[in-house]
Image (tube, rainbow, N blue to C red):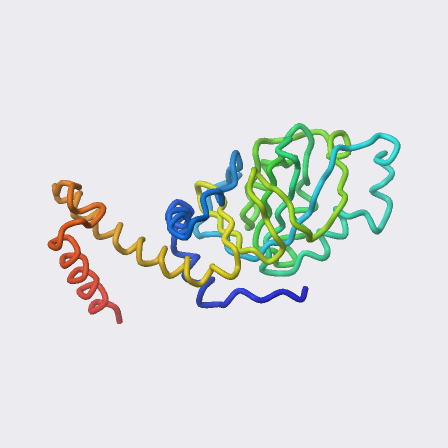
Length: 244
């Protein structure tokens, strides 16, 4: 695809942090609008979805250009995209925030899963959601859709800039999904953001332990007291010493 590849170490760090923490790390760098709105996981998965974005864009369907016979065209963008989306990438679909017709169904998602695609995200809807929810591929949408996409959408472009759930998504951006939702991380910031999010996650784990033990949050979260900062460093060293 001619894009810079996501570093494996960065990918590994992103597998272990939440989208909420990533949003805060991005906010620290001035990015305020990276969490895709009104898009939810079809089913809870045991680990994060992480991959670079491959995009598909829909526009409003026009009846004279979008009869059901268009699916017979081997160059139809939806079908081509399913076969072109690279392994370990996430198909991100701009469905104009309209779930009244399906962005895709179980057969197309099954094909992407078989090809090693890391996940599928649409700000519209899927059909066949009970089947897709059981697949071993993370999928995110607004709500279920039964009608074919032709009744509302016309696939028009592959792997260009899109808007998905009010977030700008460029090909190659890093897409991270968890059991809450999906965040978009610009590739050139992914390493810095992943490191900050990893540090934040460790600190929040420490805070959670202290709060569970009865400590007040003032001075602790955020760590405005020297005692809290020193306590965290000691805690982190002790944790590191326990690792094999």
